[in-house]
Amino acid sequence: MLQPVRGTKDLFGIEAVLYRKVVDTAYAVALRYNFQEIQTPIFEFSQVFQRTLGETSDVVSKEMYTFEDRGGESLTLRPEGTAPVVRAIISNGLTQSLPLKLFYSGAMFRYERPQKGRQRQFHQIGAELIGPKTPLADAEMIALGYEVLKALNLHSEVILNLNTLGDAESRTAYRTALVDFLQQYKNDLSSDSKDRLERNPLRILDSKDETDQKIIQSAPLFQDYLNDESKAYFNQVQRYLTDLNIPYIHNQKLVRGLDYYCHTAFEFVTTSLGAQGTVLAGGRYDGLMKQMGGPDASGIGWGSGIERLCLLLQEQATVVTASNLITIVPTSDAEEPFAFHLAQTLRAAGLYIDIGYSGNMSKRLKKASKNNSIAAIIIGADEIASNTAQVKFLNESRQETVPLSQLADFFNTYLS
RNA sequence: GCGGGUGUAGCUCAGUUGGUUAGAGCGCAAGAUUGUGGCUCUUGAGGCCGUCGGUUCGAUCCCGAUCACUCGCCCCA
Image 1 (cartoon, rainbow, N blue to C red):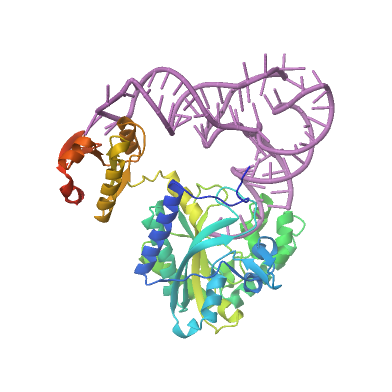
Image 2 (cartoon, rainbow, N blue to C red):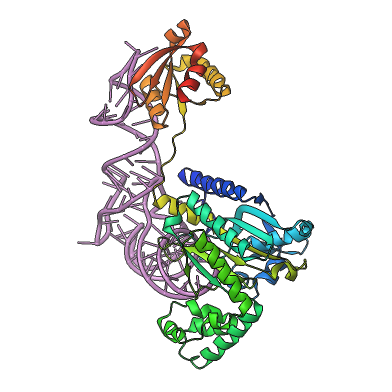
């Protein structure tokens, strides 16, 4: 059996249509915010991800497609979009032209067990705003995400979860307090959480284990450890969102898995995709650029899974928009050359033309119905002799004779 | 990476308590219709019953492994 590689998928038909719709819609919205497109290579030196995402993160420790090329370099298929974009900014000296607003779409790769809404090769749209460190930037990025979802008519299916991870100082203070607190319950924690206590204690906050949750209830709260600056920053972001009427919930347990995040973190989440409910997510990453060897510029960005968006679009039964297709129906094989020539002429005039290929006339008309044509142009010996065509409107049960020379104008007028 | 479920036609699914040529509906193709689609009727094509191995005189069916899909965990988009 010729199977595609595990966790990969062929895209065609309605799925391909939806995929394109998502990308085109998102880019059109991003353009209104003055985002420019960027395309980075599909793979990078492994260091790009290892150094930035955090050695203990799941992505780096078990999910990367890493391989050695023939020159002995360790390369990795990109598991996410932010690190390559930041690398590209440094590589190309774009740090001279901050602020930058960049939009991308493309394939990402993670070696995971596939599930609904989770593939090994998946595709993201994403946006990064690099330079300004102001709550306005955070709010603008969230607004962009919201507007993209809105343009796809998905905003009502999704809830914005918002949190702050504070600056480095606040986070370190809280982390210490949390670990101190959890140490006393160490033996009661789930095995996953015991592990997390070492690697990423904040993650324990959103554990699904019941016992963990009970313990967490009396744990110290992040907001009590935020310094004034972090608090003020987050308050301002919230004020902007409220002012823009973007609904959200402050989810104090929202933690993001990658090392480079700080301050604002957000996820648009749906309940209708099972365990993979996160549809568009991101956050602020102030230390990333410097960590990668660039200047100390801050940034905020998000990524969104195109496949997940498409699943949601399918669930709400999106209607395929009928194009204005017209099918030319030769009454027999003898009229095919003439019909082909006519098709080319009409296409050149800007019309969408298909040809009914084989069988008797009945079959050819049937095909014109099936491909959703608005009309059939019937060409037989009589029509050729009289330089006319029979135009049959397929959803109006109406038919009229039109001179061949006027066909293009006839349809262009009809469709306008 | 861990645990559960499922694999029969392009799609949705029957079925065989182990026994010649494995079924239906939809879809596809041809015809009924020598120039008129959606409805109807007739006919046809299409399956190594996911793959490999074991048990058996004989396996699509029982057993094992493997692969894929799926649900949950982990994690994320």
